[in-house]
Image (tube, rainbow, N blue to C red; front, side):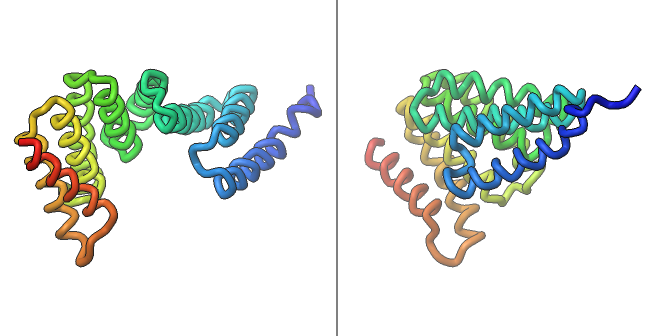
Length: 199
């Protein structure tokens, strides 16, 4: 029994969706709702072909992008839900000590801080720091970003000493990497100054 003609068009459809996603990212940005929608179509296409591994990868990407969109809209509850779902897929099928897992944990911790879920946020950020340290190295921009987010979490609780300690560690990493100020360094310095003034 031959393959149904419509099934033979799957590869062609996937190529078209891939081109659409690339174009949408260039025009509207990685975290556009249109891009997330196109990714969802690709997930459906892989599912129809029973290519579940590829479907899971695209599903993870779509969930992260949806979470980023909700976060940009300050809908932190919905962002948290989508980050958590993406994290479950990543840890189970890609691995916990991966760049994707570190990124999602960092984002999830930052969103939890916005929701004033401080204990949960600190747990996610501590894990993110551990994962990013393992994947990227202890003196990486990824680790500095997570340390800065830990500082922000402490600052939101009025714990200025702990906030300053983490800001200082983040700035120390960035200062070793760059000879001139970067936007990230300026942000961390401003955070340190604010923590000092509030102390």
